[in-house]
Image 1 (cartoon, rainbow, N blue to C red):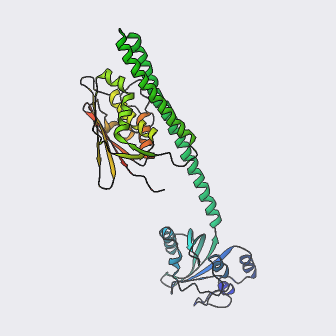
Image 2: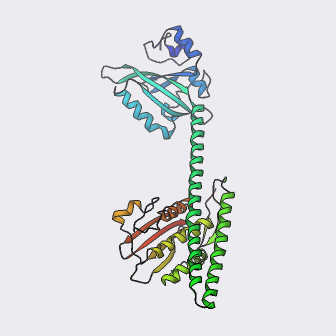
Image 3: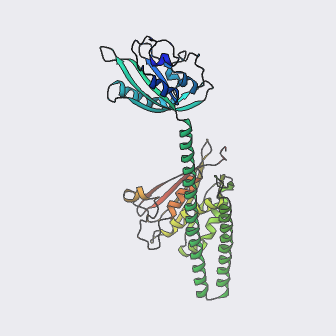
Length: 386
């Protein structure tokens, strides 16, 4: 490279490039007093030469040769595809220059973010690049600030999601208890003998005890809202189902429903008790609510554990079913209802899906109108590493 090349002026190695890029002292002064590093690309050797400041920003001294590593090896693998797309677009003369924000490998093995702006300044007779120049500006501080803002936004979004989820738990689940109390008291007033009244009092005590347990669990959630992860414990699935079904005893008796809890009695899962109780209650309550009027409601809950420890729970009923061709995409949507029930709020299945996903699981549904519905829950049984 000739001595009047700007890159030679900034301490770069000699290149075969014959042309001068800039020769004005004012440009040199501007670069000297900025955070802008300069590079030059020799297309014939596919080597990139860096200015003194560009080397400094990468952790090198002015006397170190950076051409011993191919320039592409310095680009972070996750950024390479976008960088090359923009560079190739410029090489094909589709853009006047190329611009990219990507990470470059520094001498100490870390990566820094740079704003890279380049241009092909010399081509051969065939139009292929011979030489290109560009600038590198260290934007690591800005990128870290953006990442912090994004992280804070994600945290706020997550907290808002948890708050919304908690509000739905309170309104939906406590409404279930209020309905149970109301029904029991109504039956109590209509009872004709003391034995019947005593039986209803026992139901009332069961629902009351369950309500106290739920309030305690919800209180624990409130007290731990600042914790990123919800409180979890090892819970016995079979016992959790039995406890949740007790709350629905009155509705089960009223509809003469049959519930088969076929879940293996030794299966435990690392989950949140309030969430798991809510999931079971919502699915069982829906099965009872939308039972077929011409047959005895039957709800069957089965379990299966795969070799990799994945748990599958199915909740199957013989109710009126759901038209999935019509409502399938909205089945787990908020405020979506499908049967014209005036008491339906469209919260239960949305809440259930949200809670299952919070616990790291997944839920799917199969249904046929007038035949019944099966919900399938898949979830890891073991505690995940922090």
